[in-house]
Length: 84
Image 1 (cartoon, rainbow, N blue to C red):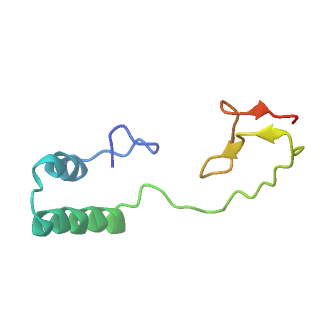
Image 2 (tube, one colour; image 1 turned 120 degrees about the vertical axis):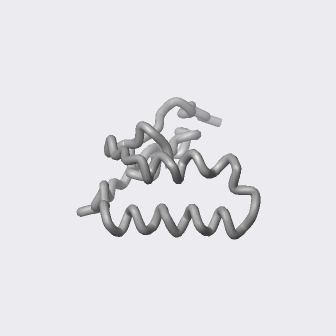
């Protein structure tokens, strides 16, 4: 939960849930915040997944450090070659 979020969703109720986390010092308070978050999401869904991304990446055995993120985008900042 954050603002701004990827869908540009914002409401006073959503902001109140976010603001409540730092002071949620008990399981009951955290559960109440999660319940409110789920209520907001049920009544005002700001995102609806409609498909998944399936991508297969292949490389030579010497390519190391390659990984893709949760939606399948390649993350190349850690890639290196090990030809040993």
